[in-house]
Length: 102
Image 1 (cartoon, rainbow, N blue to C red):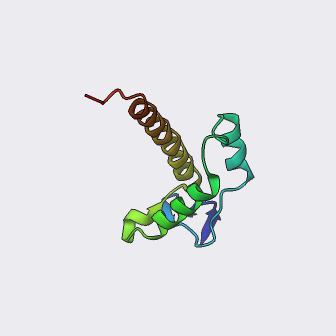
Image 2: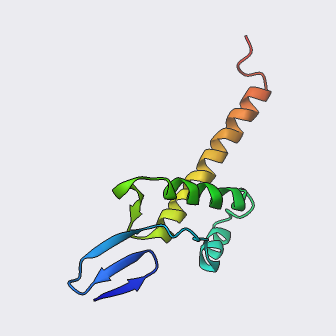
Image 3: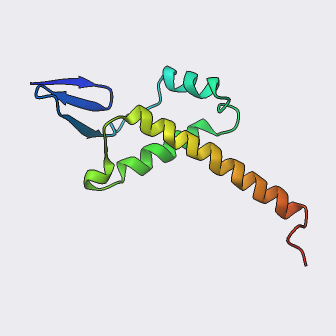
């Protein structure tokens, strides 16, 4: 017999097993609150990130597409997306300033 929790399964023996992302997965209100508390909500296209996250993980084969905690996986995705956006924006500003022009 198993007890089911968000994103993972705890079997009665105490061992945790990961699950695949549900096809209908969406970030919940606690995910959005977490992002807002860190100032992430204004810097990203949330619908696009949600679609990219879902498509990426649903397309992963075998064990690669299995995670213990999908909420933490989503949070890491958002942290990375924010960082990548900062880096892209910095490159764009640098390129527009003519820094690379010879």
